[in-house]
Image 1 (tube, rainbow, N blue to C red):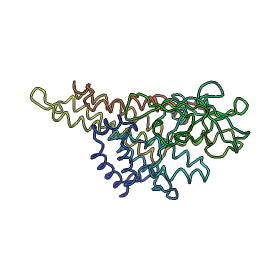
Image 2: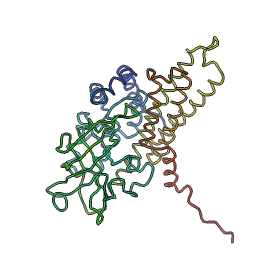
Image 3: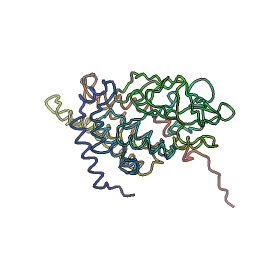
Length: 402
């Protein structure tokens, strides 16, 4: 493994930090999340046109930049530093890999170019609060009726004609907590089909404005992560990929692979947020005076900040390694989320009384930490699943000396 960044990666980081520094300060973030879209469309187009950010990990044949997921993770470290509200995570980290893996050649040719250009955004709709389960982050996504399981709840898919060919599909059901679901032009909906005889989960494409589609933006703990409730009232949908004769295991496999890559991206994003929260705290304690001297000069404060610095650097190393080897994404995400939670909590404490006010920016980092752990964790389940996959606690046969 070569841990050194290339000149191109350093340039991406520098340019992105410069743009976000000018256009995405705390006041701009608060203003953007309160718009109808939940983000700044002009900034999104600037990032798409100047840096090709939505298409960083999209192949060049589809209009993307053709970089690796590691480049996307590096970029998301900078967006996490600014707490950038944007469709980047939902579009580039969740939907693009699924379309690339499962889509037909015609679907990839039609969807990936506008997604890479930023003119089309997408959202992954997974029934219930089960996004981490669907992406196999906290457990096996083949176990449990997270997509409906043929019973009431979730989303059900019905073929208009037998086999789903010719007549298409109809979806009905409800999905909550869909990241950027209220503004996305394309929805990837995980739905259950086949009843009890041939139960399986498939992915379907639903276009913005489809008859019977009702979307409403929800109030969330972290305003920088827009979420929506999606209602599907006999909505016409297009199957992603071919129906085939399988049991849907290829869909579950694609979701798990996407989850591993998304975990590395999320870990890098959380590290960026934690690093910025720490930097802002260091600046504050150097300026704040108590008993005639800067708060940061007290040994107890120095020790707390040193502990945070070690945590952030360790989480950054884990996130970079996961970007190179996505199999380690779950562990890196657990470490990054825990680091962000601890760092944001300490930031509030070290800011004193001002850190507890809504007018201060410290709460933005704390809410990002809490919301991400609810969406993609919790941390102990991320670690437990990683341990299960590694057979860490499987009893080993005892060797008997002869």
